[in-house]
Length: 325
Image (cartoon, rainbow, N blue to C red; front, side, top):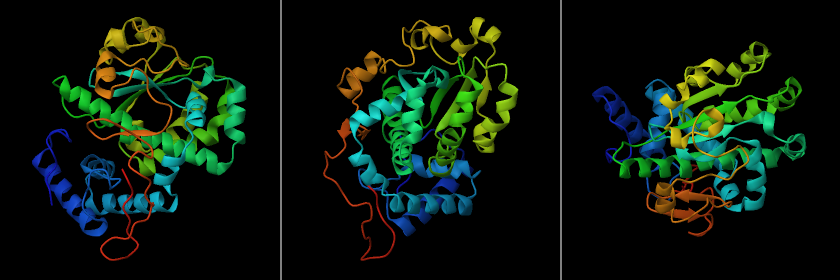
């Protein structure tokens, strides 16, 4: 068994490192060794499951096993390869949007502003088939763990920082009507629960701003969408705190959108405003619409390496599978 790379995971305590090594050994024995570009899991993924289950190895292994089966049963790798870029571009308007900048800890920053979304977009989303909605949520979340967080981690280390394993999100509730939230509640709840179950510990901080007068009514819904660990990462900033520059404790002014007290001319429906570091790292001026991953060195577009089956027999047979990562 290989030990975690110092450029992959943040520093660990001795107890944490021992638990990680034990869990990784069990996973590699049951599902096969971590292989870059082939397995859907890596050191960061394994550690996320460990932290999500409060360092309980049996609980982490159980959740990992459930996720591995879910990925194979849902053919997630193939869905990722086949997802249409034009559809993804439209769908991203109804989900947290990448700003193209990072917070002070190097975590990629997203903004979700449901009150700004055209009601017709809600209708298109909700009237899409259940399979289409599921595929969209799963593929967008797969981008978080296979593209946005890894590329931010590489950039942060190039700048002298440490590895990045989480994201930072701003949820802006300005302009949100109770009716809109009621319409979206089931969809948003399903997306949040999918993330908690199969993409654990990907959120570092969630900042709620511009809360409406009926916020106390919906707060119980919002809390129900997240597990206890995620709820503890939610920060609510009042208008007074925003005006006092509280946001700038989390994000450099030049990377924070003007709407939240920063200097970046970026609004919700804009494409990601990649900073120069990302442009140089990725070798692009704009983020592609089509599915892609970051392999630690460059962007890899869906289908570039050749499509592989979701279920690949290992060790001469059996139900275990590797999924391209």
